[in-house]
Length: 422
Image 1 (tube, rainbow, N blue to C red):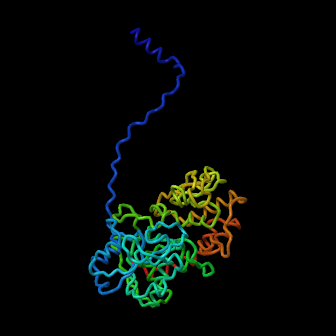
Image 2 (image 1 turned 180 degrees about the vertical axis):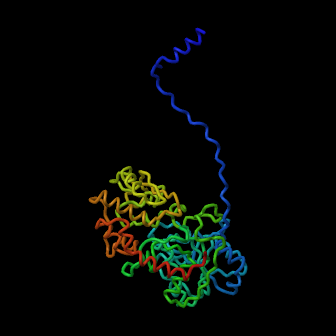
Image 3 (image 1 turned 45 degrees about the vertical axis):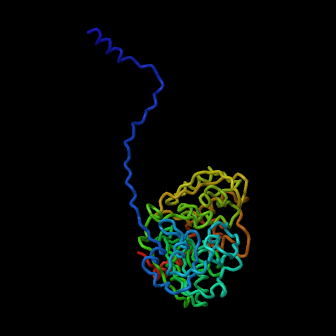
């Protein structure tokens, strides 16, 4: 009885203050991840070789391509075509970056012989961007097999348009071997190119993000320019407009250019590439080109905090420091943000790009600069001067975007005539 009473009294006494022990989290139950089902995307090159060889019978064939022209096993289209006894491949055409994709942006590439195949290579990013009559001489068919990035100012679409124009003159048939748009086929963004800002980074009146494949673009270029070019599209199989880019696909990603290293790079490119028209590094020469943006004078943490409070859909920003090996600020410590898409269905890269440029401009008005020129390169990328002027005038991102909404709606109606995939 005494023991029970003593225990009761002790329980009533105040307990001495002690440091609280940290609460250890319970062991988490293992999460069973569902395997992503394999999505079979059959590119146009495979469809051609399996089903449509009759198109090439008895023809002298040229191929406009680069390192991205591979089948699902990663075998180069050049090797596939040369190995086929029924195909007479006589020449290659190469876009910016060359047939092997090693030249940096803007670097001229000379014509010559392909070291691996021995075929003549006609560069369309050297002395000329338009195929000449001499280049097209003796060619019956031009196969086009390039991985595009779904962005107007990525120059491969201009190369396609120029080839279609040259083929109209020479009489050659153009056959596009289609590949996916890595940005998807649903969302479009940005101003429609205005004629005053046309250049090789914008040669057709379409928005920055057009949501079309190369085959669809080719049909639109021929139809809207009223070209008499004989055009044939070999559609791919298994690709739909709303597919999440490269999620479980069996089609390998091959970088279309030295700085387009992954689908994530392609995802941010329509917005962050705007920094090419400024004195801010777009991350060239860093570990993550176009995903990193920065400059020596930027406070990366402050910039990330401001951007993250803006509520931009499908994206987050982390402070980052990097030292570019080449390009802007080579060898200097740059500070800025890492642009991290989190939802491909809601992420708007061009809207994000405007917000980025505007925020850096507003935070550092005495140090930020748009490159000068007539027209300014920034305006050529945007396809209009309204973005740059809107930023300088202090307009909001929504007000800047609102200026081209009617043209964007009109383009949606126009492109519907040329879509191949549902």
